[in-house]
Length: 478
Image 1: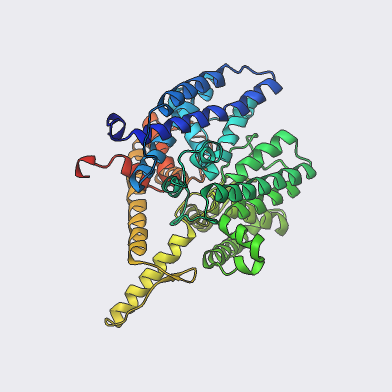
Image 2: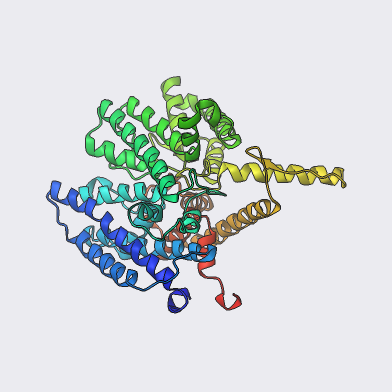
């Protein structure tokens, strides 16, 4: 394993040290919440000191060449996410008298912006723990390492690009401007701007500041942890509509917002992925509304719930405003498909991504045409650009791995003895980083083996499979 080969991987250790220092800094925020609400800071101080001490020791390793290659970038990202999940679980483990596997599940669910929980009653949790859960969504949405790159220079001259590519969701990650640092500043400005706007609107809608802060952080990271057992069901209709809109907005590729600010709205609607995303959203809302309108007191309520839940699931957020278990089978099937598809690349969402779906369908269409016209030469384009055969092949490989990993997870979880539908739902919602799940309100009822499987699945889903797989590749063949 790479962590045993210190002479050859000093740069990896050095990066991990800086990531752990960044994690130690993150603990300052829940500690502040502890002081505000007069709660003990010990559950946060202990992991903070562990993270800081390990971080300082590792970052002291001398690195003469700080250049990072593609494989190292994947390995750094994979190990970093595993470490922050383990250390980040200590506040819940120490504060809530939960088993460590339960605490780890909750933390992985937070950082991967899944939103699935092992707690039956979140309203009994301390304010600091509620904040930590939602704050992990906010940090995990854009990526823990991208946050660290913002505050701690990991390498000089923009050599962290492979780390950024390995962590950011979607088939490709590029720079908006020549400097990675400036690119991240633009992205975080958009991220913070949308989050603050949502907080203000929720306050205007009558929501308390603490609730609006946590709900907005969860929306921004497309997470799903709430402060109430009923999720968002008891808030005002205005607040529900605000959250629904912002969930949709956070499902859009953030590069498009940058294009909007420099060139106007006409630039963003040139995006093929955005147009398909909007089309899937509208069709899904229309289908679910049509098939559930008879379940509600009036058409407006049915439309609001359909819109909210489609926005929640397609963006892998996981908030809810009602009981989705009452939906007919056809609607449940549509929502499970949305769990897998998810929203746009370059957003904070998990899942397969609309961009890959487009590429797969275009590839299938080309292969069918080639069967009819064997001598035809047809290039596949996406967003107005010709795709290389390597990109098409990697997309197909990703889809194959996606399906295989789901099958493996379903097989392992099936030993718990739950129904096939419940097992499938639990796997789909964790692997797709969705959180909202049919027939499951709390994951505490699953075995420790299943919880560990879910944790691995959430990490695989958030990091889009390859960083975790590359971490365990046989290095003897290099």
